[in-house]
Amino acid sequence: MAESETLEPLTENNENELQDDENKTKEPSTTQKEKDKNNNEPEEELDIEQINSRVYVPPSGFWKTLFSYLGPSFFVSVGYIDPGNWATDIEAGSRFGYQLLWVLLMSNVSAILLQSLASRLGVVTGFDLAQMCRLQYPKPIVYILWFLCEIAIAATDMAEVLGTAIGLNLLFKIPMLIGVLLTSLSTLLFLLIQRYGIRMLEIFILALLSIISLCIIVELFLTKPNILSLLRGFVPTLTKESAGLAVGIVGATVMPHNFYLHSSLVQTRILDRSDNQQIKRSNKFNLIDLVFSLNVAFFVNASIMIVAAGIFYPNEITDFKEASEKLAKERGRLAPIVFAIALFCAGQSSTITGTMAGQIVMQGFLQLKMRPWIRNLFTRVVAILPAAIVIGIVGEQSTQQLLVLSQVILSLQLPFAIIPLTKFTSSRKIMGKYANPLLVIIGAWFVIFVIIGMNIYAVVVEIRSIMKKSTAGFVIGCTLLIPLSLILIVLLLWLLWKKIEVHTNGHESVIQGNKDIELEKHEEVNLDPEPKTELSSTDHESPELSIN
Image (tube, one colour):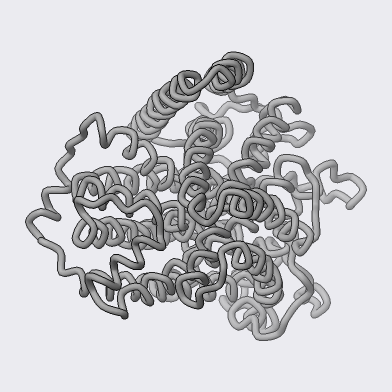
């Protein structure tokens, strides 16, 4: 391969050329190996489509292969330990002790199941969840799903902004409003690291995740929880008082934007989709990456609840500042400092993943490319404005309510991501022989209907509460909240009813070479997301398809 070709970002075409070279030499070119493995030289500002198919995967060797696949799930895991999760964990531990640890465990198992579907979708088809929605659904539905997803991302970023600001306040006594405004500087940090490629971003996220984990271990050591009481918390028990909070824990734990993010990031590893062995290997190592990362996230969430139960219970803690003061009183000066450092790192790490998810969603749903710094700034402004306005008007005591609101929004958006994801990955028309087995389908739909049921319950309770408070609340409920809820329920029913179409809006098929769609008659299928015919740049209707 010519040197000029190896210096270009890898696309599907030159990925196949690189695979041919590997088959001949069993080693990547020096230029490619240095670029994928070291990433020492800064590159042009990378867009999401430019990071895919960049990371070299060795042809053999378990540990080398595992190392090359570790990374995408790091981004996913930090989304599960953002400040919104901290808020629900602390409230649960301070109010109910260890009673709701089992809810965290079940949420983590559900998250692993659903995230594995997102990973398989990206690996097998070469399309992320947003792209697949655009290929399968009519434009009005695509725009609605995009809008709902953007609201969820903005809510996530608001929680991250607040977490970072609270961390700064606890560490350096910086006022909350100034701390919220200072979080905009993380845009510069993200862009700086992004210039060095996806592996450098993964290393940065791993470093923050390690700091958070170490801080949590210190907190556990200082807390010295009762082991027997802790173990009883994994026995399912639920009361009327704890049911509402259990809904919040599920909503805070399973993050909708992570499915879009994960289905895209797994494509950063070089993969020949015409080789079934490579697909199987990629699914295997991505699952190992996922299980490891989400169990780290579960350890962090469970530890926060355990610390809250061991120190605060039965006195309910309503905000992070109160929690920090209580930690200092009960466990000395080190405990609140470690707590604040971990909270700050959680906010910063989640900020990066939220920004990347925003880029993927916008390009996937709308085919709209936006320079990373513009997208980052846009997402941050959307998150900062409501947080700054509410804090400026109501005061710092409103931060806890904002965090809870962000988690409610995420919980409500969740079904609109996991229903399409489950239907796509269960379809042989899309996944071929890699479609979900029966047990996975049953498990995924069980989780979906449990989440939908919890959401309906929470929405009904909240609307009734608003309508009972005042005449204005009754009017708002009748004219806005109830009609809006009914519209969303209709959309959910439509997503459940909609059959998977085999056409892909002008592209031959999600599975190349399967034009007759007779998958039941053919055991082997060629899984390459683009036609073999080489298209010029003017022939592409979907610019983001060059991502894969």
